[in-house]
Length: 367
Image (cartoon, rainbow, N blue to C red; front, top):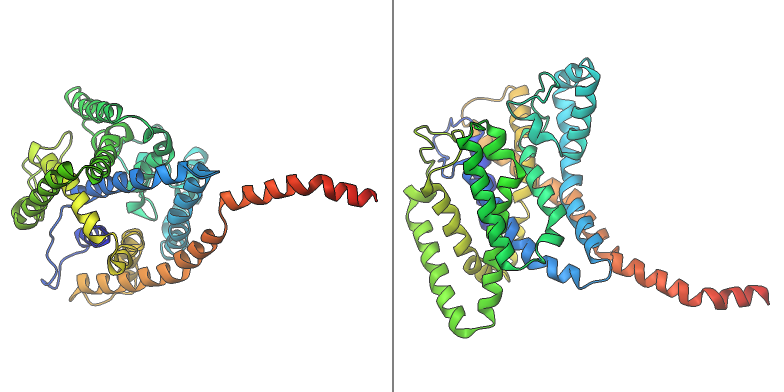
């Protein structure tokens, strides 16, 4: 599903870039792209977490892997953005102390950026946008990673109950006047259901693999969902009308919006089945995160350098791909190689070995 993740990252990039060449179409609304990212994340976490839980120190290994996947690349982009947007840093240095502390903490550790990039200041005064503005979408992702090892051990009935609660909470909050962007797009309890929808999709896939009749039936359902998505461009790939406008409006989304997400969840097992062994799919998918997290920096850099406005969208895409390649090859890949040789299970093995040999060593020392 690497190609799908790359397409979603490109959709967000293109939505943030002025269209000047006429060559790059806007095909998926960025709000929808983010929600589909969450569904895919839930699918993958359900796939890998049981394997971690079978290992010694598995939960620690899971948290370490997620941390190293997100933060090193983010920190490189953050440092580059600090250099590029020095005026914003100067503003923060002269801000009130509570806002300064909150801004620095949320900039470094991401958590809290959902509160910063919203119309609610929580008594901290005016809070400017992040140096990496799109990073707020990582807050629900990180929170899901924190709870996932415990949540994804629960039964499918409990997960379904949480999804229903999440949808109900979204509707209730909107109907009681909580219609600011924080409550319908940033609030983790209402986004949790989107992640768990992907997790349930993965569980159905795992169950279908063990039952030939179920596997055939689910393959047909998954294929049907994929065909609807792929061929109905007006439904899936064009920005829809959210509450009568071209952008996401406050509160809940119309039923067709959730139909798109549900169809995507149903199609993921088939996409995963046919792409899981393709190296090119994994290679392209590895571009999705660095491309997503670095594109605002590239847009800002091009504006600072006053590049030609002709073909600005093409310039942004090409330069973002170049930067993403550098981040992938020289930040993520070396860290991944180190991570592979440094696991919690290997540490536990060393500690157990030391425990076994400790007494003989003492005896030898006495002699």
